[in-house]
Image 1 (cartoon, rainbow, N blue to C red):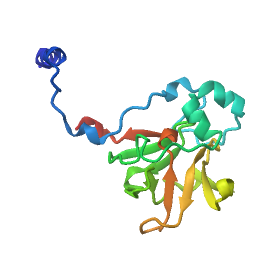
Image 2: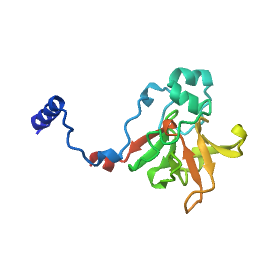
Image 3: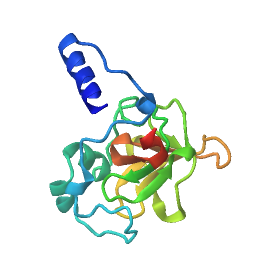
Length: 181
């Protein structure tokens, strides 16, 4: 079996054909930033972090640092998760805090991943954001205080809320069943 797969791959490399595609396309690609290189990343530790922006700047790639620590926003329809449909859990890419389950994600057509509720009460916290002449509610990570996105009151039931998040700040981990299929 292994030699057959290797042969198919070699033939595809030399003949420009595409290998057979499975349903795994529904699972977003692995992020370029590997949380393993971040000493503050933990999917089990829920204690609040007190890390300076200068320390985060050393650990995080610039694209993540600009959104997480400088409150930037990625362009609409450009993030890897805005239309993702895989089953799993979304964590903060900065610290590993559990943020959202995929069953709370919905298609909002706004261009960013949208959820109707966080995975647990203390996953996120909120601050008033009046930047850019707008009156919004900023959503921050409950563990590392990184900027995640904004909260709006135009979401679906049962909450009526839309947590509009930046893809670059999310670390998606597919459910084991999804990974095995």
